[in-house]
Image 1: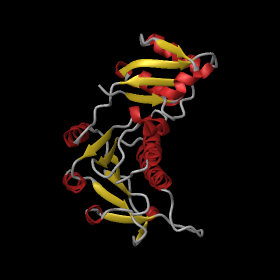
Image 2 (image 1 turned 180 degrees about the vertical axis):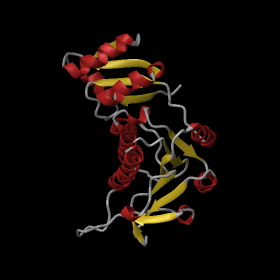
Image 3 (image 1 turned 45 degrees about the vertical axis):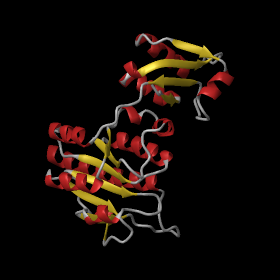
Length: 253
């Protein structure tokens, strides 16, 4: 069976904490004795996982060019979540849905960065299409710095159909577009909402855009015309979080 490779201190630590049973082997760079790596070794012992000390050459070879920071975990492939898993998750939510939809993100660095931000703001699920989109690769997991183990990622066969079902479940769809007539800051993001961000350079696909309840833009006051997709995602998610926290504080005051 093909194994996944997880590298980096944050990613491996998160894997040890959240899914230790997924790990088959753990390589640690021989001779490295700093506190951060020792924390990984101690955690592995707690989870009854033996850490194998290997030389730098072996670790570099096994990491296949990934920046490993002295640690590499070989693990069973992560089970991909699909539409039915998404509906089950939404049915269990006790607060308004806060979802992120990434329409055709192909750069693993961007997907990893988006997962990391999604974790930071409390997104309950990230949704991506099965086709024409990067999946949960080792690079994605490394860049996500552990968020790949904490944020549920759903690959759906038909994104347009999934968006239709989300609308039927009362989730408002807000997509980003430089053609939008309103800005992000003029839009209410406090209810059940799915923020939808398009692919690098191309933006939202036509069928995706047609299903959005609102299209919003990010104001650009400088000379550049657009932001990197992971940066744009971060701007949108944190504006949604700001609004939701403000509403909650007003309710509780």
